[in-house]
Image (cartoon, rainbow over all chains, first blue to last red):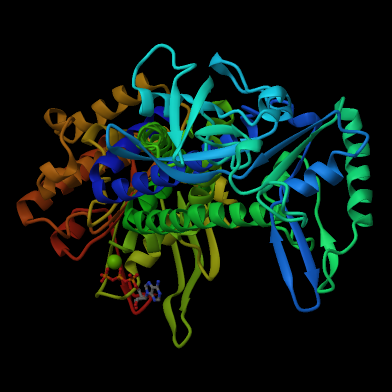
Length: 409
Length: 221
Ligand SMILES: Nc1ncnc2c1ncn2[C@@H]1O[C@H](COP(=O)(O)OP(=O)(O)OP(=O)(O)O)[C@@H](O)[C@H]1O
Ligand SMILES: [Mg+2]
């Protein structure tokens, strides 16, 4: 029986090449979009290089000061992190780093754009960058405001070419020569709190990090607790500290500055009432729904058309002893075969798209991969897709009256 | 074999009611070859479809092989048609996506049978209609007469006791039509199959055992 369904399914697909093509295209295209999306989310959420201690870290990346007339939100000042956050008792370490900033540098008269970021010494202890050579700069070097730099593998290759070692060599950024002290594995730009091409001691910053005594500025903090059990305590202490902060100006009457675990912090909107997480989930859900909905409707439509075209076949099968149930079964099998074919094409397509995306490096250093999670999410959606688009038309078909089905031709 | 009692069929649409059949009572004996004639639109196909349990009457009772058929479920009806009935249509109704052999095997798919049995029975049925050399063709590659012979093979493959044929020669020229008629007569004679045939052709009707004439939904002879 199943073999026979297979036979007729293949025959039908061959005969209705255009419909088959449209269906397969719809399914595989949808799957590709979903797989790439999942790969992206999976990468951002689950790949914890270089901040491997996420389970015992809290991230502070934004402060909003709000008044009746005004509303200002941005990253923190060095002063705020150094003065208020450092004094907390629970954190064992506090990583402070600036946002990444862009500049240009020249190699053999060729301009390359380069991003740089200032960090403190704890930054290298809180995070766990993979050092391909050399090591991070030390507390002492920071105190001496030494012009040293940790650079990424990409920049090493772009600036120095394919040489085995660059530690001790000089790299120019923003018209200053820095001595390379270490080379680290690349970080994708999607990890905006950690990404940079070169990392510099904060003491070499041209804009004076200590002169800004406001709360807001261009720095992020990562608070590290002794263990993950201490994280709630640390969060509470941080909140208490924020609550006691004096208002920086009469304009304001409220300060919002959360210390969050990685994902909520990553998605922090700076608005207390609007959770970034809810936003992100809603956006993803709507996107997935739209991406799925159109091809599903399309496929349902195509399936109904196909059924109506085959009403004579349905009439004949019923006349010769097929029950409605059998026909529903046959049609769903057909649709599942189609869906599986579409899925296979979709997976191949996804592999190609991921490869292209990775090679084109649209997003610097973001290496997307097709792993088990991504694949199973993709296949699950595919299965739902197949059932959704197959069941309704099959049901419609089975309702067809034999005489009417035979008449329509 | 087939007993119709006081059959009435009304087609209702939003605006009109058509009385397609009114108080038809008919007894068809086992092994009988009956033809139905009448002007276009008088209800011949409707009557045949009701006999074949493809359509339900508005009123009346149908017994086939002494078995009541009202209130059978969709599944039971399907099984009943599969075992007892074989259909032949004016426009053949072959499945174009399937080869001749697969078309003929179709009724056997809905019974418990092995692929080997199916092929064997279908080959035998095709031999009976003289089409052994066309098994691997697709319907589109056959002439009208050949298509109708495939349809007959499909109708007889499951060895049903009753064959219902709605203008089986309607689309064919007289030579082809006679060939088809000969096959049906042969079937009736050698296997004792009960056959009910709708036709417009007096010559064909004359070759059968009995003729029923319909006019405007009623039996006139
Ligand atoms: N589905 C339907 N809805 C409404 N009326 C119908 C329907 N099917 C048939 N009829 C009507 O019922 C009557 C009988 O139709 P039927 O098809 O049985 O005629 P027939 O004798 O087979 O005609 P022909 O020789 O042209 O095939 C006709 O008047 C037709 O218009
Ligand atoms: Mg008719």
